[in-house]
Length: 485
Image (tube, rainbow, N blue to C red; front, side, top):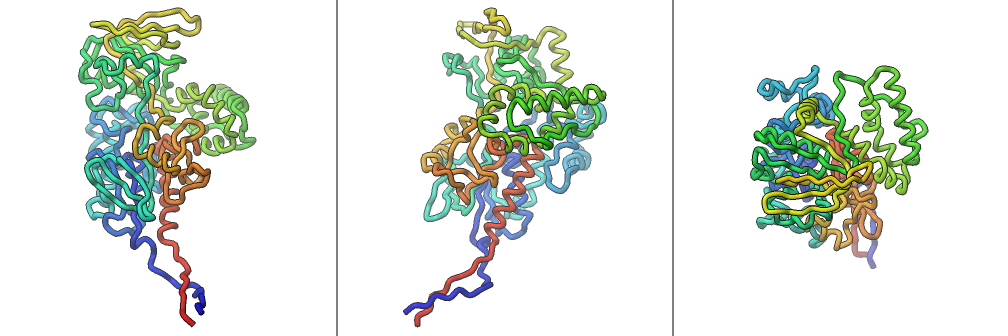
């Protein structure tokens, strides 16, 4: 006969002795996760593994650039990248000498740093943990993620194979998807479909007329990068609405508006509250930007209180207007845009592309313009896509994610904003239940959290994910012993 006893309070070796965390993506999100995990001091060498094909961690698609014209669209003192140390980036800019080397960074007393400087700052934050071996950087793209004998197995495109107990997907922003009407340009060297490629602008001649599909911050990055390279040809920024990002306000001001009192539960009620708050600040002589800063700080709570049907309504009717006010251009870019428009070299137009006719030396684009639907023809030498990332297509765009979806371990966000996850950032499987050891970090989780694009919000989410992983790894357990009678 066997007797089962349950010794109470018996300690066993922590799971951390054999656990490994694999982070897929080493941009800001992935580097922050790795650093926060390493700070717990309980991981052995190479137990935190980051798959990132770039040479350095921390930059990613957003910040990995050496173009000095590309700047952060938020003042440095608002880049709260290090939890518990909100001024870490500002201090590093001064201590490293980077600020002194960038005389154009300070505008109206605020620092709008180069993006490459922020990438260097983040690389410096994680470097000590790479040096001591706690964090391992695998410079490969991930091709497969699958279950193998109860653990995760991650396989890179150059032969790396890592087994892990927890996986965090932090791959960030997927590439844009060109409008269907541009499909006939596929393979044409005059068509630039992905501005994130290092050589995307190399073939553009100084006097080429360029038609940019998109009018957000990505499009303005293209304008700045082209002008920095000596391009002087005409530029047209095209979108359905024609709205360009708004400028940042000068000075330091507090957020205005409390949207958590009587939290709006419809798109219409949210719009009414925002309009009322805008009227209040305007009458008080405050910048309207203060209202959108309040929306940002309260955004996750507001989003969670909207039913799914209302979230979709917000995305359908208010998204572009919100993004033009939320994702504002830094003053250096605002000055460039104003000068280019005044000189007639930069134009924004709204409408719908109805036809594209590639010729030998040029491309003709026909647009039904808003609001009257007049057909307008543009003759250009280059077309580039700057519509921003297609989060709704992220799973299909990466083979390793598509395989996880095929296995039933990932599902698309029902709002079209990335990957479905629960309030604890755990991936939601096909059966509707969370996958306990698979987390979604950063912008891929926007559908659940709403406001999850800015550095402070991503850093806060990363901190919560790390707390959950640590709690999973270092939990003590009760044991069962079986003794013969």
